[in-house]
Length: 112
Length: 109
Picture 1 (cartoon, chains in turn cyan, red):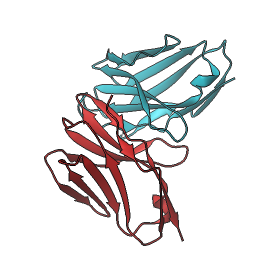
Picture 2 (cartoon, chains in turn red, brown; picture 1 turned 180 degrees about the vertical axis):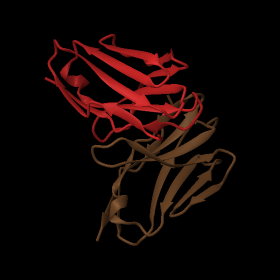
Picture 3 (cartoon, rainbow over the protein chains, first blue to last red; picture 1 turned 90 degrees about the vertical axis):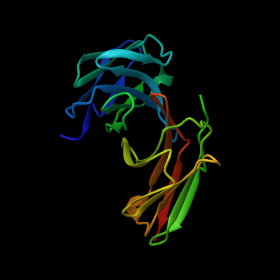
Picture 4 (cartoon, rainbow over the protein chains, first blue to last red; picture 1 turned 120 degrees about the vertical axis):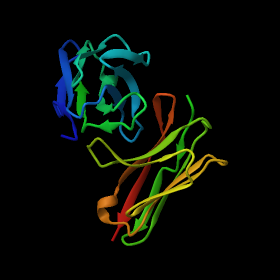
């Protein structure tokens, strides 16, 4: 298995909802990432997990809460989001923090 | 962070070569990458080059690196309509990737 999968593909939520994004890889990678991407813009790094520990938080608001339950899974818990949080959320993984990153297809999030 | 610049748009005819350029500023970058993003999709890693190399060829793709000028380019030979996408260069400084602004490639018949 050489891919990163993300669920759901699309998500629409209200500002008072709580939802979660999921990411999974079975390549034995030990680093996993969350990125946020606005239309026609490059991805912006949000979080990095290395060996299931949070190693980078790019000053992301606390309404985004990452979780790495095991080496294959990465979640992003969402609560009290704002309409400006609407974006494509991309997950990536790499062999370690210095390896090339492989991306999932993304979750298109719309906050109403 | 460091800025990585790309031209916004490139239009080519099918069968021609495309050259996408990228200028970076971090001279300590170890690896430089090219990613392709089709509409509504994630990023696909196309190729990468180590900073001590000048050139890398992979089938229709040729990467050129001018480290003195901090200039990276991606040449796509025999460009096809399926190559239409946004192309991002990215530099690795430490353990983070910094992406370029992206170049939208349009391939016309």
